[in-house]
Amino acid sequence: MRSFKRLSPLFIILVLLMVGAKPPAEKPEPKNVELSGKVVCLAEEMHTHYNVELFGNHTHLYGIKTEKGEYYTLLRTSLAEALFVDERLHEKDLVIKGRVFPKTQLLEVTRFLSVRDGVLHDLYYYCDTCYIRTVAPGNCDCCQAPVVLIERPLNADSTIPSP
Image (cartoon, rainbow, N blue to C red; front, side):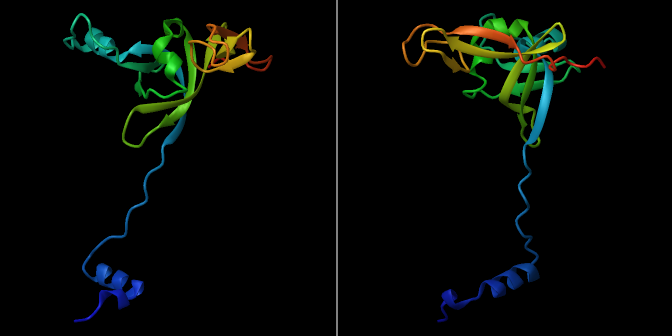
């Protein structure tokens, strides 16, 4: 009996091509996006617009509703955690940078900013005691004091141009 260990890789590829096997397709890459909009509960939005039945006490499914009316589901990552737990951010107009995965509307947040009076503002949480900046609310990792939300203009050139 012959050993298959002696078959060359070229021979195996030729056999696969002869029987019609296709080489593995390249995996599509996520798309980098920058979206303007607000954090919303997608379930409540679907209830409002399409009469989807909801329980009175339902779990929120957070996403972004863009200025164009498109919806993206937020993936809960460490960089997006503030968008899930800090309801003050739900009231703000936001610019969200991130990645949308192929064939989905799933959004991985890599950065978010607020817009006030046409000016971009950096959003972060800060411990006044330890001078530590973080991306989510809670207690300081160092002293355990609560961190505060800071909203600071990026710079003089951060004005968003009018359409």
